[in-house]
Length: 131
Image 1: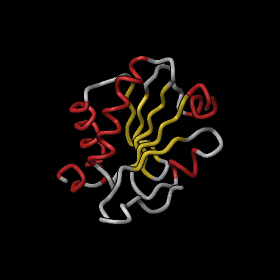
Image 2: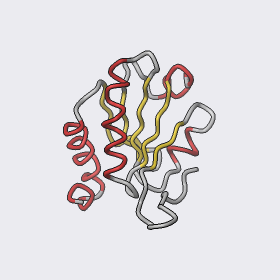
Image 3: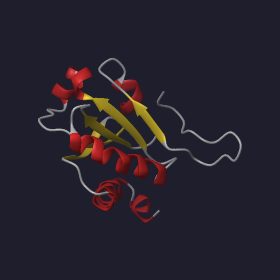
Image 4: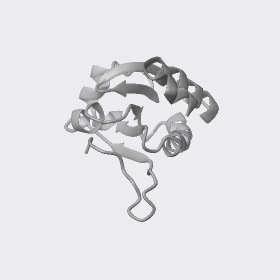
């Protein structure tokens, strides 16, 4: 589901928004999201993909309510892989209402990914990088 953002029913704090998508539901899950989306194009057999996954989940937690992490297993989503011309995994995309704002390939430490996200999102919203 793309609308809204998840909150705790008890304390009403924002929760990390992490979802999986494939060829059949990518549009609904990623492109129609109400917040920017960090797309992780990964594969189960990819060591760097497994290494970067905790960093991406950390960033989703840090930006709860302001970012959605969508994980796409490229082996199970050939149409998405072809659409975004995935030649290496992991490939990361930042989408805003379906528009690709940024792209990078390969694993990176959480600090580098945080800076990349901040720079990317500050292009559209200067307040995003400061929050």
